[in-house]
Length: 475
Ligand SMILES: [Zn+2]
Image (cartoon, rainbow, N blue to C red):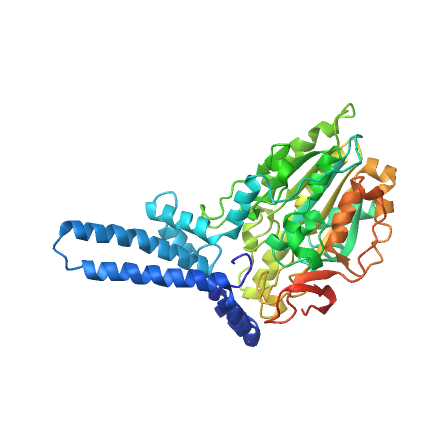
């Protein structure tokens, strides 16, 4: 997936497996993407050049000329193939990964460099962030000094139906989360309307509290973590490698912990790092708060998970679930593996809950996903996310808040969430407000659910992207 954008190679299975009419529309939209045309043109140009140089050099008796031709072709062809790879998929198909093994061949390195440098907008965003962050620094007037813990957990591709009380019997971790709710230390929130169906556009809005009608401000507005830092919190940003970077300037100026699991996604043939890799780092960051003699600053942490991103079966340890039964249809297998991935997500959250319980001061964690995902079972002509149109499946996500005993005694979670349960849907910005209010900002005020949540999306194929009511989205 090209950040979820349906690349041409995916059109074929989409046509076969879902709805042909919508898939044709998706293909048209792909052709209209500026990137597609630019890289398509460069690719064809490179391919023509390298073919011509090989063709005209083939009968030459001049050894030097032959060598030059061979070298030129050897340089251009991998580049052309790299661009072609970028056209068809976010991660190359297995056979390309095998042929161009990055660690053993020069050609592989050229492809990967070309792929990484030319292909990925996120790469440029990362450079920008590494240089100080595009977000402005926050300047809060309020100062918070009492020790506490504030955690925002950003999930990935978790649909609203992927986590919640209805999944109680799916596995031990979903059950533990639901038990936690019944014990009074957590709350399932109404389904949340993500602000966009891709990570790149949704996460900046989530972490800044910018609503879809002001989407352009999200890249520069101060982040919630920045606000907490300026209010006196020690801050940390822990992210899964393939998620890229979204942290604010204080993180990149070294004013907070920054940890990123190794992005081995391409190099090891397509397997992302597991989310459990992030947890010991989080635990270490939190550990001073587990001593009641701690007198330092409050701490705030953002955990950006790999979560339930496709390819689903690569997101959890194989030993955690029984082997996939044989004889399942592709759709049934996807349902099973997506469920496993989501249950592993519940396990991650359960561990975060245990960390909160170890803290001797008020501690809470807010969880939501950056967007959902289109599955085969939706039969809606779309696969994964950032589809040719914005679907409900790729937009509606779960929301979950948990807290520890000390926070429960403070009465703050109950006050902040008192109006939330009655809402039919929440907007993503409501989750931001919950995060800030629980952290002691914005007057620890009760969060009033957004009346008509917006999403930055396209309701129908061919629509221009813009802020539209979530309620107008089709399945
Ligand atoms: Zn995402």
